[in-house]
Length: 298
Image (cartoon, rainbow, N blue to C red; front, top):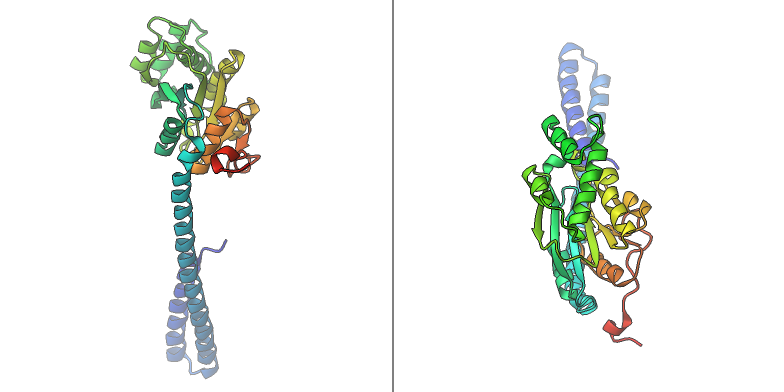
């Protein structure tokens, strides 16, 4: 795509150069032909400049119009969402793990609440999970009784297994305290209540927060081995997507959890409509089939 602002700036610069050329040319030589050619070139560039400016104005207006339409569709979807998900998962207990560096969208929390899901525990990965500190790596190696040359990815895998054990209700004395004191995780909720399923919020906008192949994969592997369902989700716009890694681990995915279609997809996936939903190239379908009983159909 052509950058119109860059193109217009370039044309303005050419105007100035040619104008200066006309001034110098007319003062140094009396060649009217050269001056006429330069003036014609300036006229053509000026015409092109106005055409490009008109195109930019139309593109900005078109983008604003489309943004308004998208906003209205999202408002409409949020209005319809409770009708589609209400009480579909009554009594369901879920744990939420926030990997990457995204916040939990408010719409996701509301959709879970409307559907009857109780979030019994939540774990957020903290910045120390990059394991840049040699002292921190040493403490982890000692805690897990590992070889001193072990890689950071393997260390994250051990932390992931510990987090999965915490969420599964396995009581390991001092584990939560150790991980929190080292600023690896922030835990809230009740880890004595095993969840029916785990929602894993991935996606990173900073490469230093990308742990899909180490932490997330270790977490998912643990839950798969213990028959606890995992649902991998991320926001619609992230610099580094986790979707392909999640899908390689045979879990359902939603790549637009910040939007109401993604929130509906998550609830229906948790109800049993397994799949890969959303808008990105990794998605296999935009949404699950909507429940006709909620729509008044036959």
